[in-house]
Structures are given as structure tokens and as C-alpha cells.
Image (cartoon, rainbow, N blue to C red; front, top):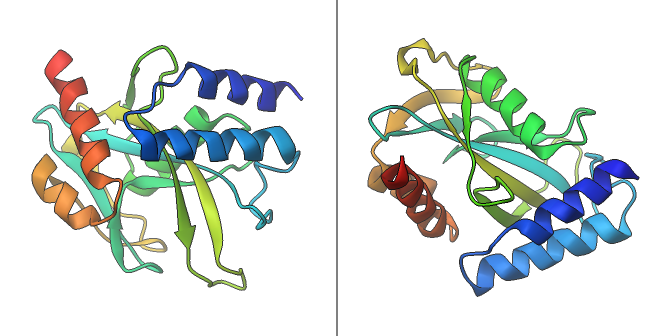
Length: 188
């Protein structure tokens, strides 16, 4: 399966920031290696792949949306819809959820990935609790005023300074991801 082989190569090229992310990369690698349906939203054991887009503007602010079902501030992202390419999935999700069409990928290292994270999603929408094996990318927009929320999924949509965004995300991986975003912005 070329899509899975490509993904395994991508994961091998990624340099985890710490032992926690290294464990996430190992878990995603195991999923992709062992589960032919790893891209399918209906694969609940051991979970399925998702892709996220962290979108920053020229001032270095991070775009977050207040997710309707989870009632949390999150980055843009979601499920594969036939792309079988996490970068394309992340871009599509970011465009759909933000209305932005000028997203430029910021390549992080040889893999292009910003981060890899495995996290639990609570039961809902006739789905059991399960794991999202999330591949995360960084994008820049030059038109932050063009955002508009997708009301089916978002209660709100806004740009935040990185430290405020870290607090709003409020998850274990937020500090690691924000540090990576800041380092990438410092290099630009």
C-alpha cells in the first residue's frame, strides 16, 4: 500500500522533541504498520489517523477554534476523507474550518511534520471512546482577517498570542507544540 509506506517513511524522517513524542511516533508507526484501515474513521481499535493544522499569521498569533462537541479550544484538524495523505488532510480541514485559502506549509525538518500526538477522544456521535493518532503541520496565512467559523463545528474562531494559545489548548502536548511553533517562527 503506497500511502501507508509513504507515511512510514514520513514517520521515520521525523525527529521527536522528547520521550513523550517519541512514544507517540512509535504508536503511530505501529498503527500504520499493522492496520490496513488506519486512515478510516471507523477504525476504533487501536484508533485511526487524523491530521491537524496549526495556523499562524504574520504577527505570530495562533488560530484556534472553540470546538462545538468537545467544548474546547483546539487547532484545526480532523479525519481523512480519502486523501490518504496527512498533509493534504490537515490543509483541507484548516481551509474548511477557517475559511482561509492562502495557507503556506512551514516545513519542519526533513519530514515536514510539526508534531505527532496520540490522544483520547471521548465517546460521542454513536462512536466509542477511541484514540486519534494525530499528525500535525504548521501553516502560515497572510490574510488573517479572512477567517470565518464553520458554525456546524465551531462556537468561535480567533487568533491568540502563542502563550495565550498554549493556555487555551490546555493539553499535555500544548507546551511542546507551542515551543516548536515559536522555534519555527524564529527561524523565518
